Length: 305
Image (cartoon, rainbow, N blue to C red; front, side, top):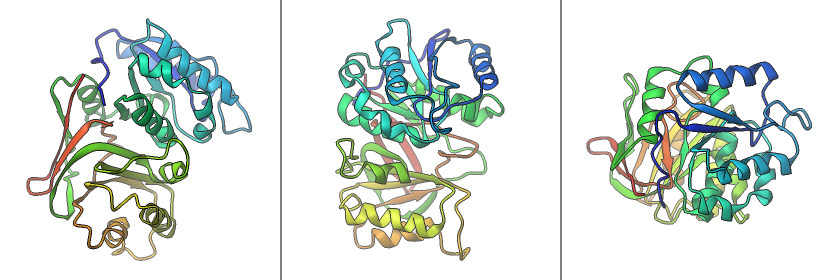
């Protein structure tokens, strides 16, 4: 897959809402936050729209703005304002040919996972599991998150995961692995199974994060991936943030679940990757060639344009 062009100073950012909306007041704050970082901003007109109370307008509208931003020659990068719900509803309305012909920076996470899977698989485009404007940039864009964000989007030959101070990478199973990075939010990944956008894990390094799920639900989702044959195909696994995910026993965690689900497969597993629904939020290039090494814990991405 190909990295999009590097983010440049004064770039034009297209701000979209593929899932849930924000308030009108928040829209203004998002524009100001981007302009304060030196960007010019083009905004979709559905950022504060509502359908059902949890979606930013009709499916056709949400998708059309993504299509427009990719087609617009003035737009250099497309940032999602937030995640939420309903992103999988718009997939049928995305113009994949337009995306394929206009490879641009695309950033988001959580419910945006469905779009990452589509753009990686169908458009040969590296996308970025990274901070969203309302969720991460307006109130608290910490230095570690900001540095990683610009580091990933401006990388030239390679991008090395910058483990934030106090958040060392953990090793659950030793080994080295290499392959394109795929994944994102666990619930959304599982919802992709059996669809045209089903994630391809063969030879890939799988990244997983989640928010607000009980350990029993995490277990159920992980074993859905196992039973669908998705875990035996991977070359390695990276576990991100599992924010507000409740446990019944403190010493039994998502790491234990994943080790049990991959028992006998000799798949290296690393955890404490700071990417997901918390701070700091470190950007990961989905679709990029990734190398993980547990011996000297590191994660490195090749940049190919």
